[in-house]
Image (cartoon, rainbow, N blue to C red; front, side):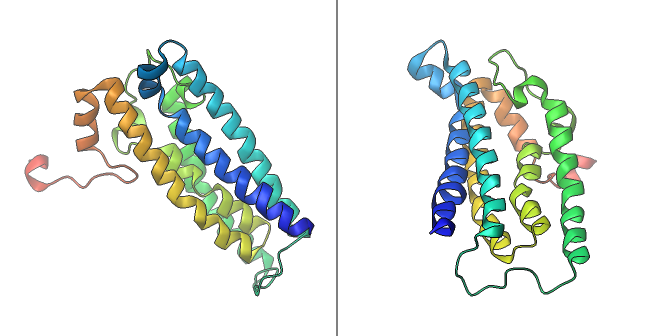
Length: 202
């Protein structure tokens, strides 16, 4: 019984609530058109609540370790734990760097959307969503550290929501910045740097 309650409420509802609220948090300009002043503050609240639900969802990962679902999967990987842990570290290093650089170059807007914020620079000159590209691996890394095949598989179900969030954020940034953002979007990659055409590099 506990395993199913944990799966439904902590793993599914909390994690998906976190992603839903995060998507809402990246739309302050569109929300401002509807409710006016206070939209950016409301989106900041969405982001904080999203972070809380994400934390609770990660707690659900730990609970699952002791209360796994009756599924036809091994409880742990048939590999030495040092190998599984090493894989987690290999993924963690680049994803952690992307989150760090993205947060550093985005500044305060990482946590709190601000109307007066200008377009980003730094790593954002190459890719538009470094933080999302880094953060999307969080559940997978945690699942590997917990040595759970089921949680590893489950973690991939969250990936499409990060793409959804990126698309939603870009729609809002077009409203917010207009043509300058469209020009920026055309010359950079969403998650990976765009390959320059030969005629552009000459």
